[in-house]
Image (cartoon, rainbow, N blue to C red):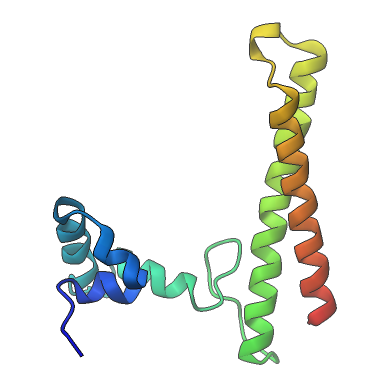
Length: 133
């Protein structure tokens, strides 16, 4: 097994790390390999927290009475629901501008359709996660 030139970056991105130019890969590797102080927020710590059942508020879910698998499922539901709520607020604002706003601020039908499809996709995902939980 060959040693990777950027081991932290490879651990984060897998084989895609080999495609990055050195001017991008080197600073990322330096950031990822930086030793972490207890009070600091680092890229590597953030990536690890995101992967460990972080909820929509950016905090780990409390495991009181829940298995780790349940926490992962609940955090996915929370994040998808937060995204869905944001997209619906955006669609609502776009519709208000379409009805009452200046024509220069209107988004096209294709953009509204894509936002609605994204909402549907997130809603279906939340529904599947709830059924599985």
